[in-house]
Image (cartoon, rainbow, N blue to C red; front, side, top):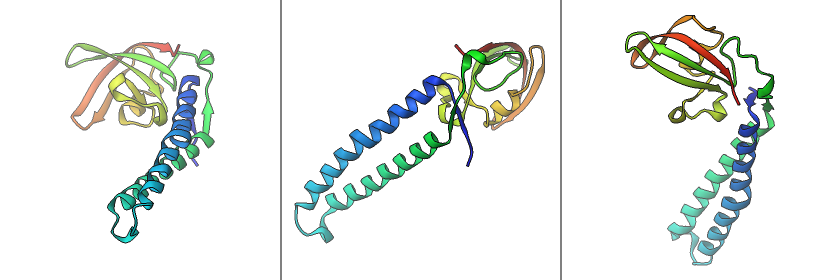
Amino acid sequence: MDKHYLSKSGMEKLQADLNDWKYVKRPAMVKQLQIAREHGDLSENAEYHAAKEELARIDSKIHQLEATMNSAVMIDSSKIVADKVRLLTRVRVRDEKKKSEREFTIVSAAEANPAEGRISHQSPIGQGLMGSKIGDKVEISIPAGVVEWTILDIFPLE
């Protein structure tokens, strides 16, 4: 089983998500299923079948979150040395073609959110950046083509 390396805030968010699915969403769906069951003939009760399918989806999500939680390892970000790009570091790069700068935070897949610049260390960009040092030039193949970046700075996650 793969380990999921999480920051303290990532671990707290994962636990909050699990609690929400287990203690809010699932009980609400069980109640909805019970109400639908009371409407009579289950073989022709679309509401019942939809609720049953949704409950199965919720149970699957709970199982997934529990598996992630069971394999989670919390990393103390205060002990991260920012001498190279690694998990729980922020990296600022310059795109050599566009002459623009971007910043990424390298996190586990469980904490990734590309819209916020939080990329997984397992993603093509994350893999391409991992281990790089300030001044290194990296070429990373992404769906849009190959990007050429220079590592400008590396910061520990706060």
